[in-house]
Image 1: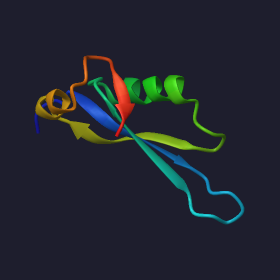
Image 2 (image 1 turned 180 degrees about the vertical axis):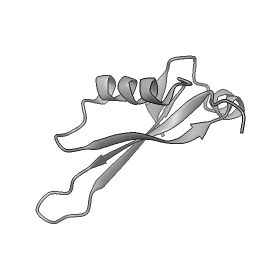
Image 3 (image 1 turned 60 degrees about the vertical axis):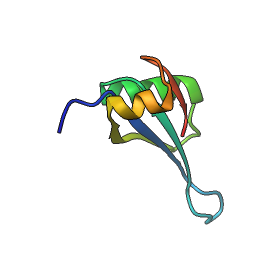
Image 4 (image 1 turned 180 degrees about the horizontal axis):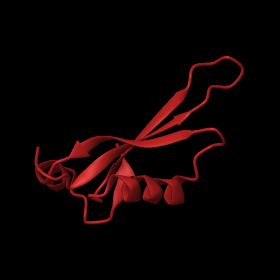
Length: 76
């Protein structure tokens, strides 16, 4: 698989009082998975106990289709 141009980053927040977890997704035009996660943590400040992870690579074509500039992030 070619090198990624970005990542889909997931925030999985624990549910309240037995509720299922809540998920949020972001498209991030940063090729390094760890840096993509860091960018979302700085931008969104996830709730306590949330798990933030890069879950899928984005190709250069997907980045172009999403109209993301290098280093940019937006909700998926």
